[in-house]
Amino acid sequence: ARDGSIYVGNLRNAQATDIYTCRGDPSGEDYAPTFTQHGFRYAEVSGLSAPLASTQIHAVEMHTAIQQTSALDFELPVLN
Image (cartoon, rainbow, N blue to C red):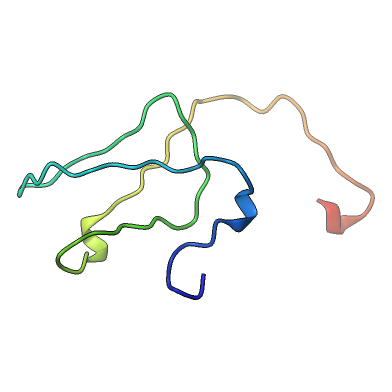
């Protein structure tokens, strides 16, 4: 968005937001939501009293080991 926040207009009414309030542990904190999934490209962190360094936040890819059992190809390459 123009104000620097993440654009979420394309989500329409989907509630794809996790809100976590830090407890203030100076050695750091971990947040891992359970029973949810989100595909994302950006994360927004707000309400800090000092800038957040890129080394202070990490995203972890998690998935199940499901084997591919089928595939779908189209005649038009632009659709593949």
